[in-house]
Image (cartoon, rainbow, N blue to C red):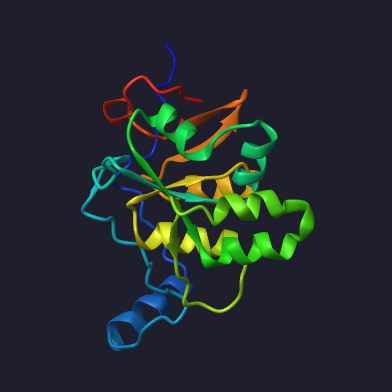
Length: 196
């Protein structure tokens, strides 16, 4: 017969404590008030009360749509009327909103985009004043949407879309196949509008 193997029992083995662990333990016990400067508190943004998962309860008709410069330019290239196209996409009344930064960007583009500037000055558009310095329209739109979740954003800019997708509950309207499409708007509020 073979000899039985003798293995150490699990509970019998003593745990070896290193000198470094022992030193850290003594420092924690002797100096409990000493704070570790490497551990910084996490700043987690508070979730607005209007959000239910990714569904934004603050978005109700008539929708307020923040319009970007290139969205107006793509609409002109595809021969789309902004207000009528938005109404057809969302099956509800829409109020296109344009910030001072977007207007300044359109004015800077010069004569080539004078038609887009004339469309932006349409009285059906709501002008939103900006109080911050600088005229970079993308930052202005992202900041406004982060503060107030009652807007949709109409843009065809990939970078701006990527930045807005990080903000929960903000739908994005864009031009696709000669019509407006919407993404991130739940079907409950959408009706039968084309989705991406």
